[in-house]
Image (tube, rainbow over the protein chains, first blue to last red):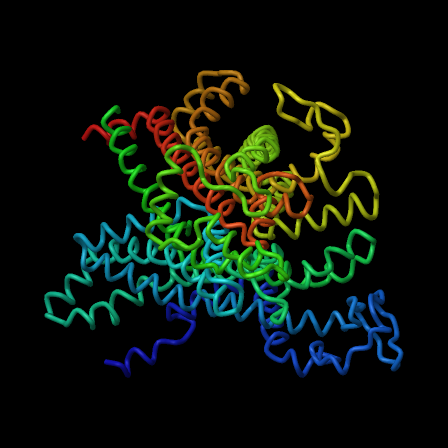
Length: 300
Length: 324
C-alpha cells in the first residue's frame, strides 16, 4: 500500500498542491521570506549584533542618545543610533526580537496543544464536558484579550514565563472553539464512520483520521495567533506591566524610547517599532494566504 | 422574550458574583500593599495602625465578606493613594474615557460604513483596493505603535497637534468635556483616531463583505430590474441588510474600546479611567484596581445582554430560533 502512495509525485499530493498554490501570490512569498529572515535574525541575535547590548562594560555613557549612523568614541558606527545608556539600537532590536518572538511562538504552541486537545476531546465526548467547556470559551471570548491579559499580569506579576502563561490562558479558547467546530463537522463524515466500522481504537481514529483533517484550519489560526501574541506582549510591555526591564522585548524598547520621542530623538523607539510591525505584518500576510490555500470553502 | 431576558439576568448575577470572588482573590495575591502605603521610616506602631485602619489584619474570607457587603451598598473601598472612595475616583474619570470612546465610535460609523459600501460596490476599483489595503494595515498593526507614530509625525515633527492632555474643557451639567472648545477638539483628534483605527478597519471589512453578499442576492437584482434608483437600492435594500451584523459588532466593540482606552490614554496622557488603572497598578492601589475590574465586568455583561436583545429584535430569524 505505502509503496503505491509514495509513487504519487510530490506536486500532486495535498501538501505539494498547497505549496504550489501558496507560491502563486508574490506578496505571500515575500512575507514568507521576511518572516524567515526575522526568525533567523532573532535566532542568531548574539552573532549578528555589533555589540552585546546588555554587557554594561561594553557600553559607554558618552555615546548616549546618538542619532543613526553616528561614530562611537571607539570608531564603530551605530547604524540605528544609541539609547540613553549608549547602547547600540540595532543590537538591542535583534535581542528584543528574540524575546518577542520567543514569547509569541512558545505561548502559541502551548495554547495550540492545550486548546485543540480540549476542543477535539469535547467534540468527541460531547455531553456535559462539552457544554461546560463551550460555556467557558464563550464567556472568555466575550471579554477583550488585552483586558484579560492585563488582569492576569496584575495578579501574576512580570516576567517572560508569566506573560507566556497569560497569553496561553488568553488564546487557548480560540483553538478550543475552532478545533471543536471542525472536529464536529469531520466526525459526521463517512471516513470516520468507516474507521468506526473497522473497529479502530478511538485513539487511532482521533490521531490518524480526525487530526490530519482538522489540522489545516488550526494552523491558519496558529499563524495569526503568533502575530497577535507578539502584538499583545508588546502592548503590555509598553504599558509597563508585561516584561521587566531585565528582559527588554521590542515593546519595552519602544516604551523606553517614548520619553525621548517627544524631544525629537525618534530613533530610540522608532526602529524597534518598525521591527515589530514588519514581523507582525509578515506573519499576518502569511496567515491570510494560508487561509486562502487551506480553506476549501473559499475556493472558487 | 421576557423569559429570555430574565434567564440571562439571573445568569449575569451569578457571573458577577463569581467574578467578584476571582478579582478579589486575584488582586489579594498581588502582594502586600503595606509597603507602598507606609513611609519606609515609619515606626512599628504607625505601621500597625494603618494595617488595622484598612482592615488588612483580618482573615481573607472576612475581608471578602466585608468587601461584598460594602460593594452591594455601592462602596468599593477607599483608594490607598488618594484616600478617596475608589468608585468616586473612577466615576470622576469616566466622562473623559466615554468622550473618547463615543467620538471614536462616531468616527467609525461615519467613515467606516460609507467606505465599506463603496468598496463592496466596486471591489475592483483602484480606490477600493487602497481602502482595503489601509484597513488591512490598521487591522494588524498594534494600536500603541500607531499612536506613537501619530505623535511623532503630527506633534513632534510637524507640530500641528498637541500630544497630551485634554486641553481646555467646558463643563456641561458639571461634567467637563473637551469637544466644545477648539483647543479641546485639537487635543481629541489624535487619541480619537488612534482608538478608532482598529474598529474602523473592522467595520470597513464587515460592511464590504456584507455588501458584496447582498449585491448578489435575488432581491437586489430584482430591485435593479424594477428600475429603482441607485440611492434607494443602496439605502433600503443593501444597507438595511448589512446593518444587522454591523450593529452587533459595534455594540461589542464598544466594550473593547473601553479596554483599549488603557493604551490610548497612556500614550496621550488622557486623564480617563484607563490611565487611572495603569497608575493604580504601578502603586498597587488595591481598592481602585478591584473597583475598576468589577465595573468593567458589570459593563461587559450589560453590553453583551443589550447586544443580544438588539440582535434578536433586528433579525427576525433569531426570534424564531428562540421560540423553538
